[in-house]
Image 1: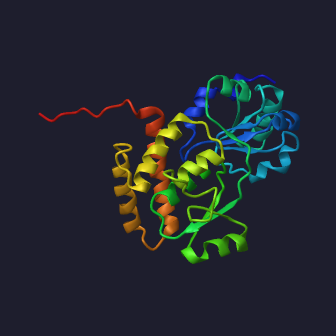
Image 2 (image 1 turned 135 degrees about the vertical axis):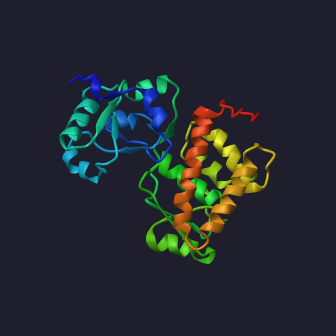
Length: 265
């Protein structure tokens, strides 16, 4: 099967990632090829290419899906067809992960993250930025819990979650001048210049070093304002904050050169 109508190019897919409306990306490489490679596409989840009927029901039919294999051949093409026959808007990555890497597009390591994460209540910057990073680049279905500081590690143990952004939660906490957002990027090996630019903004806002970027002071102001609006609902704060980081990432990725130069008469 070779139907270009079902394919999406590496550049087209990259332009759609990192925001709420991103497609679900599924790595369907055969076990040998998957095991021999240290990298995955950012945001990808892993599923086996055979037995699609065993896992397709876990996908949200309202969200487009892009599957990829090593070179965009029969493996991913056949999975895309099977998903479409099940009513899912699916396509395959033209050229597979080989084309993605050839274009120098961002990847991450294959570290498997826990499905649940827990941190201190009343989040402001790091504790919103890190969940955004995980959901957009590591695990779209990740769940985040906010609890009183003294309950973080007990909760993590009780529900099988990973603690973050609290002393003792290494590697997912501050290290030197770097904030927890930096730690997440390092641990998951995410190679993305736009994300590195965003990390500077987050670091400046979270550590009070507003001289790092012109945007850091603005991010702090927006974060404090959202916190005041959602002071009794940390999950609402998280959902509102996700849009802020979607916008900042889009700016870092494609809009940094755009200028707003209108001058009234």
